[in-house]
Length: 288
Image (tube, rainbow, N blue to C red; front, side, top):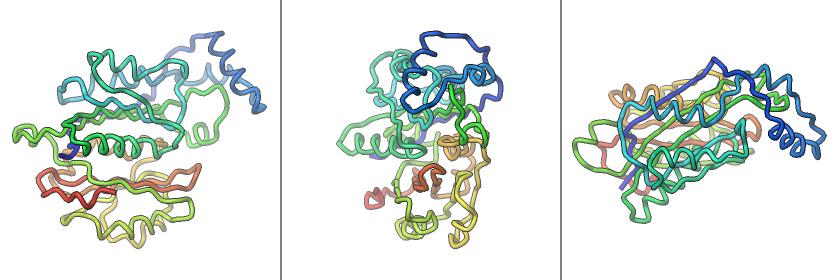
């Protein structure tokens, strides 16, 4: 059984919500940042969009075009902290789905978090459980301090919802073209080009599209003999997943495999994930 993509939604919020002063939250941030010599910048908060993970995730649920039931797994993956870090968004989302999901968040990994989420869900599935996954990838830019990555890029408030299941019913298979196959990670001393070259032989047969985030340098792709879709700047951990949500149905008519990859600008570590046609025979050995 493999996790197969059944529905997806992408969201970018260029607008904002009014700033609402919260003294308890400001005190929390001051206590958290003071040991590092960082002062809370309330003026920066007032100038920010003030859209948090809850707002992003709930709108994604409304936007997802394919209706689905409560997932067995509900994972929120993110690289930057939420606007309200003391609130548990996954518990809220679980309640909206009916309260029956195993729900948790993955963070403190940079843009690796969504790749890790797929590995966790895949391991859960390979334990013999027929399962489903609602994967939220969220990014918000309202911070109480200046972060060069956020404010100089600049990053956008964005989110993705990807719904996978292991249902092999013929009728549901027509709703998607890709199933999760593998992930790979590399150390900071391994260029993305080397990671891609090492994994090329493990790809299932058929036309393959390389979906590349905005962070890798162009010279990292020069030796890869594959068509490339380059994601637009503005996302840190959401970029390749935004374009997967937007284009997976179109790509399913043209490609047998997708290789999603990016390099974390903070750590230099590269990640890739492979999704293959749901109509092709499973290659269990391709799982890494």
